[in-house]
Length: 594
Image (cartoon, rainbow, N blue to C red; front, top):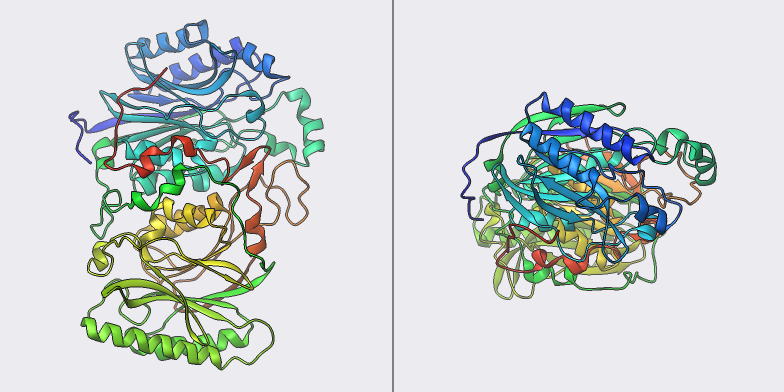
């Protein structure tokens, strides 16, 4: 990406959280008071929560339109004046009246002179927002300002990857996320992962206080089976760095202003620690389906409710790891484990392959033969176990880093790594025949995601769109966000089970992520108490020690992707506005329609 002409180093940003009710004038007073409070920190940019003008709760469409604001009306005029008074950029999100008698959920950026610099309508509506608001019909702008390039999005837009990804690909350095959320998994997963996967700064401002009229709290709680405490904003407004580190975070309760000083130029460096540029190594030609309408994913004929799985980190490296791993496979199979995942290149030396090409080929063949023999020794009841890892294989005469799924008869499925990486530069050169592959097994439809491919949100989205329920991920943990945020969030935003194996590193350990059966809001939850977390998966993490770690995944739960009323994780992705994900070279707009 070309560097911005604006040479700016330190910028002070602020996220503000507060409650908003049904009185538009009172809400304006709160906004102005909190902007005055934030101004004491002398910020260059302040972000306010979503729906600052009115609770997201309406009698009907006419009521929603009536309490929405106009671009030239007193509410936004006062916000603009306050931005000018303090000489700071201000992001405010409101429902905005449109000429066609609709209303949109819109984030607006005002500059330090009080001028409206840009606005972005919400692309992914949550629940009953679909009954009252109109979706965006154009992608949000990336706005060139004196403090950097700024992109705007709101709440559910950030629960799935497309909207923030598109802004980052079009050059945004700072993403401003206004939220109206009671879900702790927003702050735990969805907010910080958008910074890390795009290597940008995220400034996220959430609500506190009741999210519905106070008089309705008790009856709504009874009708929805959502405890009263989870009908309020979850707070935890935060500022996140491009590596996923949280620079500042507000408490769960109460009004707050959090600030951080950031070096905006850091967001122009898209390189991983191994030197791979994660934007230049993207494969837009593989992502075409992300910008095309598709019906609900078609699933396979069979899927299991419960499957015993395991990850294994060998206790030795190199060729000795083959003997070590096959012994562990025999042990796991005897315990009725049906899927065992070994780390990326488990029989080499982890992050690098310090052997000749011929030796690597021979060792890979030896590993497949040994694993197949170990699996063939299983004579117990039920389904035959399978093993996933990655090795070296020749494809069309070229050596490739390839994921392999192995059964007792040998290789059942292969998956080349899709994205080039500096770690295996000779083995990951893109090929035209590359693409997502899957296999239907009695336990469910399985796909292999290999090595660094999980760092690209497009990969797991394509997997989910193909009706995959189980992802085997052999990888080598390099950055903390991958294991702390990336794998759990990929499972969450796509509703897939992930069994991910790595050798223990300072960046993390193996992770098994499965799905709760109870998921869809406004439906009875029978298997877990409601704790506000909607999409967050159940996790089992390996320790820093090597060895076998087992758990149970629930592939059948992956077939339900309905978050709430008219909100489906796959069908309702903003595909009409996903051009930045599939077009090359990348475009960048300085402003957008207001």
